[in-house]
Image 1 (tube, rainbow, N blue to C red):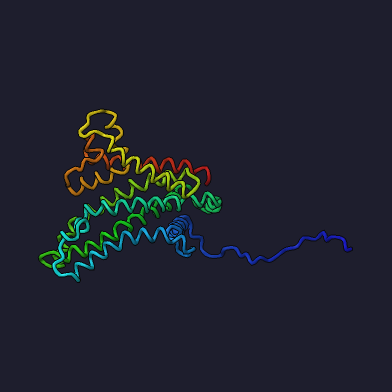
Image 2: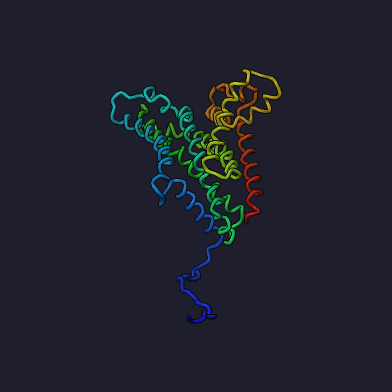
Length: 299
């Protein structure tokens, strides 16, 4: 039997160091944004990962596209026939609920797998800081949710404008006056629903659990309005009303579209709708601060 060799063995595994240009933090943030978008939408992944996100996207786009198709092929079709699809402000009742479920899927998918699989250590070995990572993931959440809400609105914008009595071009100009309100309300929904989902995903360790906790909390805050008396002057309700996370973007919508308040939490407590906008911004800022402190130790 031959004695064991004391010489080491070197295996060529084909590893080659990067010899190109070092792109730095900005390129790393962009790469994390692209990676996050692919992960959420299931691109280049198993078919099962595509089912939920694309089902929600289809639920948002297909009804709007169907209404637009009817405006072009059905004689006598009017805005009254379109129901909520003929009123951009009212359409937020439907698209906002779908956006909440979309956010419940997106935020945990963006954050939790990186902690589960030890990917944060790889990011930390690059010129990436905690703030860069959170910026990329937050930007992905904001961008995808904004597109989720705005694409159906854009489709309806074309359909509504085609029914304008003075012609399609005049309809585009006339209905274009509501674009600032639509953009402002969309921003309110994205921040109001996105920030709590992001914060929950920072601490919860499993994607399904984070999704369930988020949906439960949102529906609980939605049920809060049923426990509030109308036109109440009690201080406790004035304090709690801005924390009704589900209703804040709806109050902002009514404020921006100059609609009559619809007896949401803020209105019942005698607070102005703009308080909802302030509450949304403060919660988003608090989420950013807490998340940064949580992730700073990993980078």
